[in-house]
Structure formats: C-alpha cells, structure tokens
Length: 294
Length: 228
Ligand SMILES: Nc1ncnc2c1ncn2[C@@H]1O[C@H](COP(=O)(O)OP(=O)(O)OP(=O)(O)O)[C@@H](O)[C@H]1O
Ligand SMILES: [Mg+2]
Image 1 (cartoon, protein in one colour):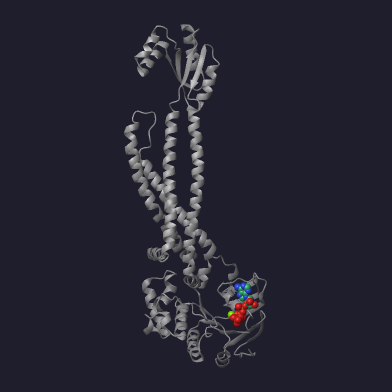
Image 2 (cartoon, each protein chain N blue to C red; image 1 turned 45 degrees about the vertical axis):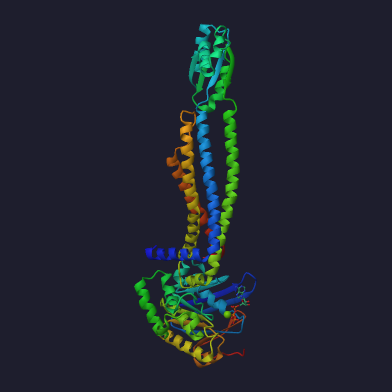
C-alpha cells in the first residue's frame, strides 16, 4: 500500500475516534478494565507458579531408620535407596546429628535429651524429578529397617490445586470481560460504518478496493485497543516495581523468590498491548463482516 | 461491449424482476431504458455494475461474464463504469472539488494527476467557479452536474444513469441531457433509465422498453411509446 494512502486511512480513523466521542470513551474504558485485570491476573499467576516451582524443587523425603538396624544394615539400606530409580541423592544423618540440629533450632532446653536420645537415624532423599517424590517415597517404605517415611505430602498438591482453580476462575472472568470489550468496540465501529454509509457506497461505486474500504475501520478498532492498554501497562509497571521493592529484601535467603522485574514485566506489558490490539481488530472485524459487506 | 444472455433475476423475496433478457449494446451507443414503474429498469442497470447478480444467464462486458467475477475483481470493473443516480449521492461534508476528487483518491491516483483531471471535468460540467462550494449551496441541477463530473472523472468507457433527471425541473433536465450528449460524443457508452417522455421523444436514441421483466420493444431512434 502506498504511504500516502496509509496516511489517509490513519487520518480517517483518528477523525472517527473523535467523532464517536462517548462510544470511544466507553470502549476504551472497557478495554482498560479488561486488560488491567488480565495484567494483575497474569502477574499473580506467574508468580504463584514460580513459587510453586521453587518449593517443588525443594521437596525432600525424610526416611526414619528403624532402631533395630545396625551399622551394616544402614550401609546396605543406603545402597538400596540410592539404587532406586529416580533417586538423586540420599544423605545420612545420625540421630545425634539430628538432635544437634534440633537444639540449634529450638534451644538448649532440648539438650537434656542427650542422655537418652528419642530420635531416629535419618536419610534425606531427593528425587531427580519433583513429580517422582511420591513414587520414590512409596518404594522406600517397602524396604527393610524402615521406621517411617515423610515427605511434603499434600502441601504442593494443594498449591497446585489452588493455582488451577484460580486460573479457571480468572480465565472465565477475563473471557467475559474480553467479550464485553469486543462487543463495545464492534458497536463503536458499527456506528462509524452507519455514519459513513454514503461514503462507503460511493467508494465501492467508483472502484475502491475492498481493503481500502475496510482499513480505516480496522485501524479505528486498533486505536481503541491501543488506547485501552496504555493505563493498564502503566499501572502494572508501577505496581510490580513496588511489589518487588517490598518483597525482594524480605524474601532473600528464602526457598522461593518472586519473578525479577525485568524482563517479566516487559513481557506482561507486551502481552497486554497485543491483547488490546487483538480485541480492537477482532471487534471491528465483527462489525465489518456484518455491516460492510465488501 | 455489453451483452446480456437470458438474464433472469429473482430477488430473495421471490419477485422476478428480470425474466430472461437478451440484449447487446455496442461501444459508444446511447440507450434509453423505459418502462412503467416496477418493470425492472433499475434491476437491469444494477446488473451492469454488479450491484446485483443474475440468478441465471450471462452478463458479459467485453466478453467477461461479470456475474462470475470474484468480489476482489469487482472494484476494477467499476473503475470502467460511471454511475449517476436520481439523488446525486454527494458527500455533504466535502466541497465540489473534493467530491469529485474523492473518486480518484480512493482508487489511489497520484495527487498531481487528480488535481489536473478534477479541474478539467469541473470545467466541462461548467462548475469550475463553484469548486469550493458545498453541495447544500448548489441547485439540484448543479448537484447533478457534480455527480456526473465524479462519474466521468476516471474516464470510464460506460456511463450508467438511473433517472438522472427525475429530481430536476424540465429546463435543468435539458442542461443535463446536453452534458450527456457531449460525453457520448466523445465515445462513452450511455445507458439511461428514464420516465422523461419529453426527452426520449425529442432527443432520439435507441429505446429499450421493459415491462414485467421482459424486453417488449427495442428500437433505434424510437419514441417513449406507452402512456404513464
Ligand atoms: N432489492 C430488492 N429486493 C426485492 N425486490 C426488489 C428489489 N429491488 C427491486 N425489487 C422488485 O423488483 C421489481 C423491479 O424493480 P425495479 O426497481 O427494477 O423497477 P424499476 O423499473 O426501476 O421501477 P421504477 O421505475 O419505479 O424505478 C419490483 O417489483 C420491485 O419490487
Ligand atoms: Mg428504478
């Protein structure tokens, strides 16, 4: 397409935005609300995902060794455990070491147990893949000289259940908002089409190509989408900056971290802009198909 | 050259507007289409610029069946056909010059060529001095002349007019007819549907009379014929 033609289309589409005043405002507001929600939602979900991943990677199986096991039995057990499929490492810790850790964590009062240590010798086992944790744990349970096996049972699953539920609710909410926004945009475009029907009729009569007729309306839809994504992007950048500023020092040294500001927030911004443009163009296409018939 | 072969048109509501038309119109002819209201004149005319398509039969322009034309190709067809209506269809927000230039801008002509050509046709229709005026500031005859200027600005081979004098007083109607004669004398085919007995009888050309979707008479230099 010639640059001059493109300039004409841009001018026409911007003029329509102004002429449609209130409809433009309503559509842009709808897009703004929708995209703001999309942004916040994506921000939260992606971070929860990250947290879940971080935690998941840290799942350990704690294997309590029965008191009947002598040194030889313990050595054999260690071999058996490390030989299991899916086991990455098995670290042994005697009950004395366990007690020392407890005392370090909870204080000197516990040192009175040094006379008769009630704890067990323990293997800390890590699976190669976090998802294998449960299977590995079950297999260890079947070995000899095992008193008990513990792992982060349920906690991770609950987080993932929560994530899935949140994702579904969010998606439904966002989809319905998305449709509202598209509907408003397509209505705005319809008004433009009706307002300019004589012009369109003449364009077609004198042989303007179909795309020549359509493009101003597509552009108008696109502007609505772009205008609607400005505020959400701005808010989300500022918001996430605050969040990371607040959280990063407090989470240092913890098992999980939030996503870094960059490039995460730029990706979210790009997503918001892309969705804005998509809603806008799709909305105008809906009206073009119905009312333009070119 | 325009050729219709057994053109039959049934509208979606079941009305048969054209009931098997066979007609040939050579390049440079001037043809009146006459007939009572509802006879099918407008439908006949709409076939030629593919505003409507025949339900069956062929609508040939220079050997191409335009009924089968892909919608992508229709714009190119229309660049070779100028259309004029009873109600002018001018854009109220544009002045005379802009209304005419519009037809060239939307087919992406070069701005310099547009300017020259628009002034040329405005001169031809006698409205060069009113180029900056808006449609509402013009008389009906002047508005029709603007619309004629717009229809010929792209030098089409064929000009189609559906009751172009229908909204005009007799004297103004004759001005418009003089313009048509002038355009026709340069080789442009003119096809004009009309109810204007006086014009058809005085300015003799080929007359195709349609009644009930059928051609009932086709006479070179014929008269208007029937009583309204
Ligand atoms: N778009 C349409 N849909 C359905 N029926 C139509 C349509 N256009 C025209 N008709 C019908 O087709 C028939 C022919 O109409 P047409 O407009 O061609 O007549 P006409 O000769 O131009 O009449 P007039 O002299 O009043 O303009 C009429 O019965 C009309 O009701
Ligand atoms: Mg008619």
